[in-house]
Image (cartoon, rainbow over all chains, first blue to last red; front, side, top):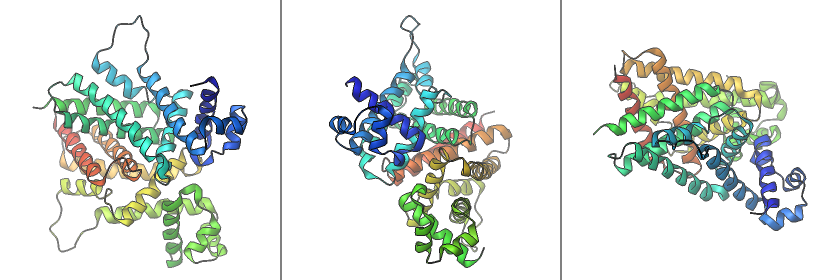
Amino acid sequence: MSARSTQILEAAARVIARRGVRGLRVEELAEEAGVSTGLLYYHFKDRTGVLRHTLEFINDRAERYTTSRDPDAEPLSPREELDQILLLELQDIPQVRENSTAWGELRASAVFDHVLREDLARATLVWVQEVAALLGQVQPLAPAATLAAAAERLTALLEGLSMRWLSGGLDIDQARTLMSQAIEVELTQLRQP
Amino acid sequence: MSARSTQILEAAARVIARRGVRGLRVEELAEEAGVSTGLLYYHFKDRTGVLRHTLEFINDRAERYTTSRDPDAEPLSPREELDQILLLELQDIPQVRENSTAWGELRASAVFDHVLREDLARATLVWVQEVAALLGQVQPLAPAATLAAAAERLTALLEGLSMRWLSGGLDIDQARTLMSQAIEVELTQLRQP
């Protein structure tokens, strides 16, 4: 992806996190990104193209901040990786707050607008499969269907807790503690024969 | 509440479920409800008043469809009541779909708009306490803080699953199965000494 495209998508994530998907106008986005609307249409075709690429962009960014680590550090255990992939989505820092707000907005707007549904379902599936794979590394004897169900619940819970955090109903420490307990509860259940 | 007020709030829930909170204009709501804007302002003061009362209205309605039962039927066990209060939020019938869509919208818009936050936090707290009380009836030896945490997770998970259902990522049977398993998993954990 070109530097210009990245610059546009960074601006789109900011605008969505500030005013919601439904507050995103192409003209204002171009202004926010410091590019012409022509260039924006050239890269993304239309507003839908911008939204679809923004979904991909915030997914990639979440992937980076939940999985990156110091290359000189000890490798993480599967359990540590699992905690990291889920709990690092709950950090009160601008990038995570912006990313989570934009993700929540894309999810909420997909209830009304069918255009994003397929991309969102696909992105969610990839995320669920990643979490299921890590659960399987921690509990290798658990059946695949049980792992997939636990991963679907943990990721759906994370979305629910994230919305409560972002809408002021839970503070970040409460949300993290609840998420951390949920991982423990699901792993205990997967340990049962 | 007067019949006219109820009629306005029913229309508000319909409009929010159709186009979102941000699509709610007082003039259109008045038309949808078949009343004058003057009457609408008389009952609810302003748009914020409408939204706050709509939140209360959809809460009361959810309370009715998740707890109502035939007066001649056998009383439910606490475990049956628990299943009912959570699983009856996941029904593919127009009233529940409308209610859940409107609730999800109020939650999502509270991320951007602080005006509903307090009402939403209060309504969520009441719901969490209801679920915690039922969990406590099923597992009387569990500590109050553990019950409250389990209830917070179950209700947040329900919101997360509901959004995946409404945005087309899960079908209703998958969502119900996942919710039902979560109740079982949390109860098993509360049974541990």
